[in-house]
Image (cartoon, rainbow, N blue to C red; front, side):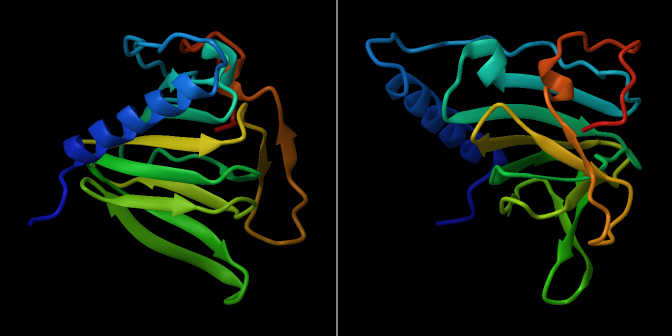
Length: 182
């Protein structure tokens, strides 16, 4: 049997999410949601859509986002209390993270037909590296809504700044909502 392709992994992930969503609401009906239109949130090169979330859909245990990053577009350096799992659908990028044991930043190539995860409380950053197609992925995380801490540097002495409510949970989303958060 060959490796699972991104569409198959994406289908399995969405099915699992809907099962979790269905059973996380007592006496609730299954929830079927059309994909929302991705928006830039004032960050050129980024497209974000919350597929299932705490603020929009009253999710209690899990949140799912779809994001794309054009070449040289990145998240800020950040961390959060949530574990994240990414499913690469298209393009290429780099996951940068602070490795405590090595006391340095580690870079790992990520992209289409790959799955990667980031444990809670790990400083990390995602960077798009391909011009066409851009890095496209679905990311799911636990403990919604997102409470992220952003940092100006990788230095452990940088205490960072808490971001809550999170950029994507504040509404808006057009090019006038410029913000240096995720």
